[in-house]
Length: 73
Image 1 (tube, rainbow, N blue to C red):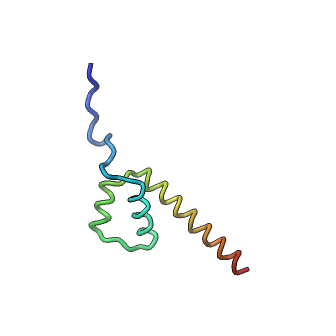
Image 2 (cartoon, helix red, strand yellow):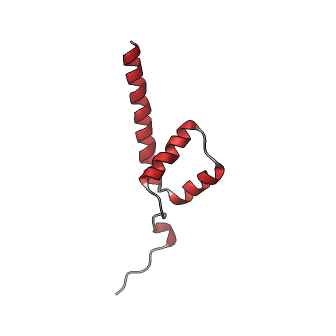
Image 3 (cartoon, one colour):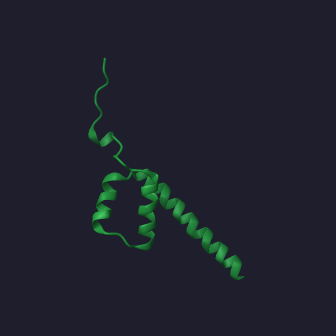
């Protein structure tokens, strides 16, 4: 009774680390990314990693702005 092989879409993309997701989100915040790197990220990065990295980046930007306002005022 062997388990049936999973379809190719159910397998996590190879090499999709959270650090790579953070790098992709950082470049996206800056708006600078080569098309070839973007296509490679689409193939390798897990979507949940992108969501988590995006939320983390957003919180970092908001916290930085709040700290800057408190420092100026």
